[in-house]
Amino acid sequence: MPVKIWEKDKRGLSSRVVTGWDTVLTAEEHREDAENLDRAFDAILDNAVTRLKEKSMPGVAAVFIRAWAVGNAFRESKLLASPLLKKEEASLLWKALVSKLRTGARANGQVETAWLELRTSLAREPRREGKNLDYFGMCIWLAEQDLQDAVDTFGGSIRNVWQMLERPALRPIALRRALEKWLGSQPKLLRQKLFEPAAYAEMMKALRRRWPARGPGSAKRPVHYKDTDLFAEVEKLLTPFALEPSEGPSSTKPVRKDNAGKKNRRK
Image 1 (cartoon, rainbow, N blue to C red):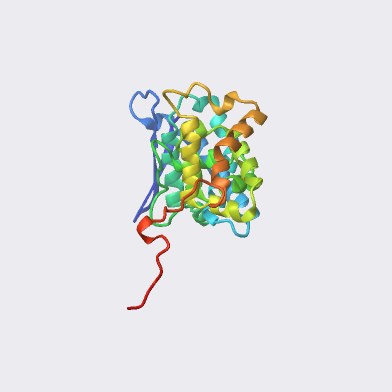
Image 2 (image 1 turned 90 degrees about the horizontal axis):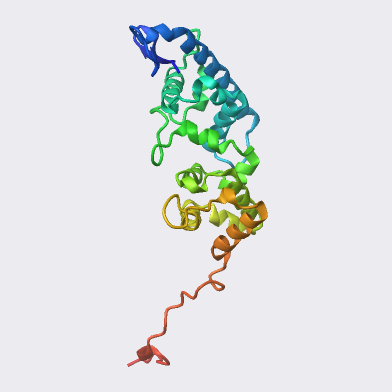
């Protein structure tokens, strides 16, 4: 799909067309298609700003709501379901979108300052995380759940989102629903501890060991389970993380025999 890449310098805004399609001379031959896509991006970003304002949630980091808002706007647009994009590399779309956020350029060449709210950083472009994962791809994946469910699954932490997303076998929505249900069954204080990045990462490692992306044990994935069976498996795997220290494996150090029963004495 041809895309417009926006650039900004001392002279103002300019754009060039980039495409993987065949061309006779230059990619400019496909500018009309690129312009159509650019207008679709305008609508998505406008809707994302609206979602961001509508979904303010006390106690949840703005970066989490921002990512969900962008993903939700993309999903509602159904742009990625377009037949024209089925065989296209998503990386080219993200490159075009980043150029719009960086410059604020609407399809008509005007600058939209409201989009600044959608940028992850004013100093740099959205960064990749994990292997071949992109920020916008993460946003779309995150928005498979509604905002409250996503918060209840990841504790409002983008780091936790990446922890799950970067493990391919753990990506199905069915597993997120089972995880959300299990977390919701835990006491509030315990949930808060489990949402801490270090603890959450350990839970994801436990799930990955059960459902590896390749090799032994990779044939049966979460998508192959009935909902009740998947929840039961998640509960079995994660219950050790919910045990109080006194209930879990003993961590008490053995008493050294040479100190046993010894009393302090003054000389």
